[in-house]
View (cartoon, rainbow, N blue to C red):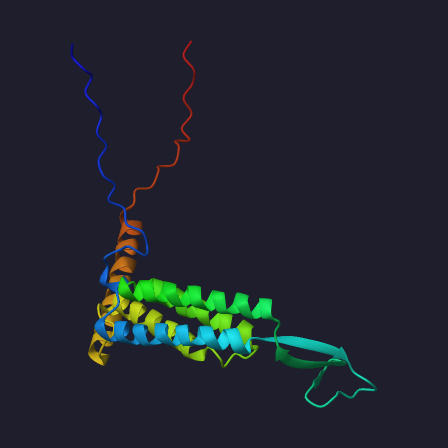
Amino acid sequence: MDTPSEKTTAPTTGRSFFRSNSPALQLEPLERKLGWFVSGLMLVMTVAAALWTTSLKRVAAVHGHCAPGYTYISKVCEKYVRADQSTRIISATSVAVIALVSLYFVYKKRRPGVIFASLFMFLIMNWATGSVYAGLVFLFFSGWLFLRRSNYRRYGTTSPTPEQRRAARTKVAGSRSRGAAAARSSDTTSTRTPAPSKRYTPPKK
């Protein structure tokens, strides 16, 4: 007895943003070395977050004056104090997770993953310490990687020379001028619909 042939489906060839093999999305040797260093710094920040995570304390001002250590802002006295234990645990856990994610993407040489991990690390450190300066190194690193990715997509290299930048600008200007010339040529050669005839034709009897 013959059995019906089974239908076979072709394997999908689509690649996700983080799994693409495009050179623009892969870490170069220098970027990977710095990625290991930054990811290790994130692990160190895990201990710092567990010990020194702060929270903002607000108290009412007395006759427009604040106690020593407080800052008078909009009729309220503010001061950053050490957060409670549960908040410090949440902060340290978040930093540890981001550090492990960064290590994973550095190991896989995925530039977008390292960019996002560094950016989230900056936000977490800003929240944990109440200071924008605490995570600036992570913000600069993510911005540097994003700039190098943009350079590769535009110039074909992460560190373009002035000659390569000028050649790319000349190429873009030439393609735009050719496109404008083609558009003008198509407008002049386009056929126009003839106007309807106004001659009167008597009806047949």
